[in-house]
Image (cartoon, rainbow, N blue to C red; front, side):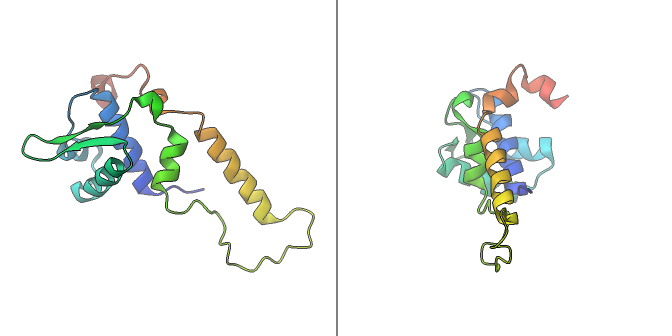
Length: 138
């Protein structure tokens, strides 16, 4: 299984925002901390705002902050929101193992289900528990 950098950046942005508590964060801050291009971050933050993960404030003194409590942000839900396609196998490919008792596609689908079930057990609060922005950045 391979997740996109978009999902990775989304987790990083939400983690950073959670550690800032209610204080506004800026794209520039996150870009400097993680070494991610501002253009990429704009797309990520816009998407997270549309999904009600972030509250975005435009303007000179604008920025973003979490729109929900970290304990209400499921990592599994976030992955499903940020990944366009979680299918591990091209479902359009011809299935040559139809006569087998167990197909490779079925095994892979079961593995994906296990992955999703695991990440559904965690929230953003679990990722930031016991952390402060200061010790996180050190």
